[in-house]
Image (cartoon, rainbow, N blue to C red; front, side, top):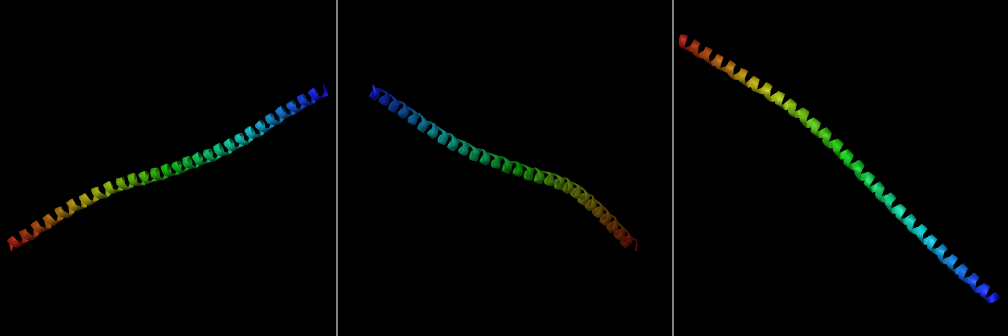
Length: 104
């Protein structure tokens, strides 16, 4: 009978030891997965921040380009206006000189 109780205690201890090892292995696996997903989440967060920074830079460039484009259009309008005035004044001057030349 003592031997039977001893065998039962050994079996119970062995079962407890196996369960304890499985529990430790599960904890280690959970810790590995937790660390992996924390690193993965940090990498994704960094990618999001990089993308947001890129979007901000592109928006700033687009805004600057739009403003420059607007300024360029304004400058072209002024340049075209100046060209027209310059040509017009040149024609008037040429006409006046020819007129004076023919009158002499």
